[in-house]
Amino acid sequence: MNKTRLLITMAVFVAIGVVGAQFLWFPAGIAKAYPVQHAVNVVSAVTLGPGPAIIIAFMIGLVRNLLGLGTLLAFPGGIFGAMIAGVFYQKFKSRRLAAIGEILGTGIIASLFCVPFANWVMGSAHGIFFFLPSFLVSSISGALIGVLVLRRMEVRKFIQYRSY
Image (cartoon, rainbow, N blue to C red):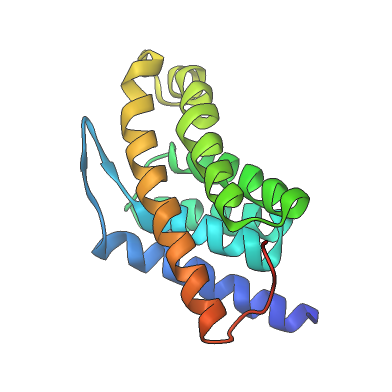
């Protein structure tokens, strides 16, 4: 993929992540779940790789924060999920493992990271069980959506790869 096409594809993923978050969200415990971010993480990790997926996750968090539509927790939540999903797909060539990487990266690792991050950056002293349930619900639902989108893309010949 040439650089121009890669940048355009990344910009489209960022736009989908920012706009989609406003249309598809639901309450998850004490927070709101934005599964579109996680679906974009899985799809971009599989189609573009871990590097672009991390940049896309960061840009979605940045744009949402600049527009006043998100919190600073969007950064660790998106970035860790995109990174682990991309690495898992790169290593194992499995959409399912990319989705599991998203769940592990966001649901577990990011929620652990958010405890000191929220304390240091946001002045909020909450424990792991404050973040874990909502991060898990959001990442599981988004990862499932991402796998379904990838399957449809493969059927429609938007992407061609073998994950078995």
